[in-house]
Image (cartoon, rainbow over all chains, first blue to last red; front, side, top):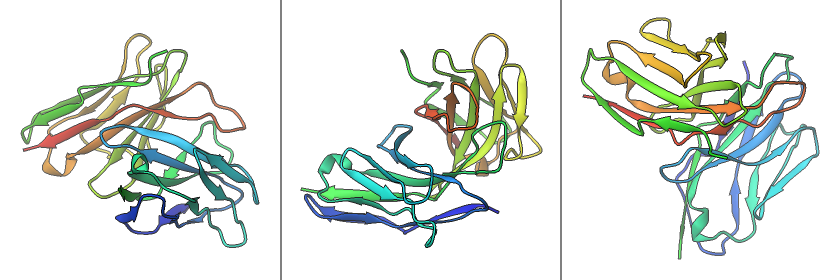
Length: 115
Length: 116
């Protein structure tokens, strides 16, 4: 079945460091891909998305490119801030025609940014 | 426009008791999804509901768990005779409508259930 794999955390970085969180997926067809962020004590928020191969999603300085050849959707940011400390979830929406948006989440990667 | 609301935020139950988790979707949203997040794990889909209908409950345990989304009022996730393994964060999400493109699911803050 469809699945999402992420690099294990926790990840600890100094402020202004470069961030990469790896994400790979297994899916039939052409899924849509997402990154969600969960700040402490809160629910998940959609950070960015890409709906087809070679699309680049971007938001708040974060970027991820949909790579079909490597089945990857790695999250990157050039310079992290303390406020970026959160748990990041990679996710996919199955492309099989259904009547709704079933989303499969990865296990999450915890990021801590220290001043 | 208030976001997705869940209550209670924290719920403590003893083994064998019942847990009721409530979710009020965003205004104008008629689709509700429930997810469970076990410690150190990602979110697992449990059930998808529209008003008065369960559309997909493939992720929900066959026993002790039930969900509803009545015509009036919030969606309810009910867990009967709770066990320690039910301790988790339960998240509700809502979306506006379905279609051939993605309709973003907006998440509530979650209910953290602890079973003693």
